Image (cartoon, rainbow, N blue to C red; front, side, top):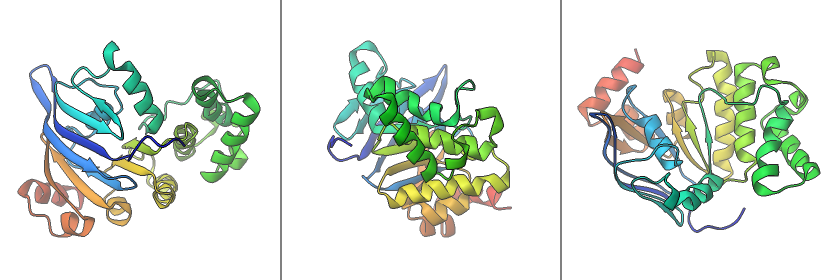
Length: 254
């Protein structure tokens, strides 16, 4: 992986409107290189929008996003910043809630596609790397399976392998276990914990409070488009200071 400076992610005063609704209301936060940040909070609080802004999928209205040496400003997915968005997406992969696998491709073919077309790998090299990544996420024996032959947890692990195939410095994970049955969540979260040990920078939107407690370096609570509290997991989850955090945790821990 190329060195593009520190893989720190810094948001300064991020604002995003959808019509008259302010989804992000001046969000400022930093994820240091190699840090795992768990983003928690009530639905509609702006968590998914935040990740989409960082990845250049959603333009924002005010503020600034810095990822390593790259900067996005309002309208950051416009023509003037396409180069920055392209480089940023190579540095930070994104894993979605709904997998977004190609149904007509096998697991190994799904993982191979982007390295061939974006990184310029030949098919032999791309296949070797894809098989190694599938082995890493515990799916070596499912390389030739099509998405419809895989469980939800297996599909999500293929999606993680596909993101890793771009040799990123970090991952943005948007509620990647919320569509899974409870018994399948553990296998996906275990992969993330393994990646954390490898030193990737991880920003994880999650409702899995146990995962946030166990794996995150810091927990950030977003509600009503604002950061209402952040800190080490033990502090935020066991001794929350903000009334909004206390209310949210009471609801999810009932």
